[in-house]
Length: 137
Image (cartoon, rainbow, N blue to C red):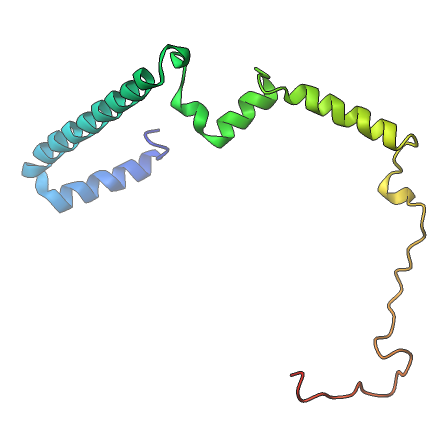
């Protein structure tokens, strides 16, 4: 698998490339495309290195991938608890226990009975239509 594409997808892309560029210009196009990708990758690495040196020696272990929200949350919740999220979680649990000493009832064991019968909208006048207000429509 290349870039998340299956073999038939790669085959279709290859056939389209041959049809669009022709068999004689395709190698030159691929050479130019790989050179462009190499330049972009080098530029990106240089920019990252400049940011790291600009931040100073405290951030020598800084990784840009850690800025992605999903990675950041996973790192903070599953390990490396530098922000003290575990302490917050424990504190919230203690606070809940202090405020509500009774165990929380399961949803099917509610304390207040719930009436699920359908009530009439017209207040019991089942044969009459509700009044029509032309200004409200």
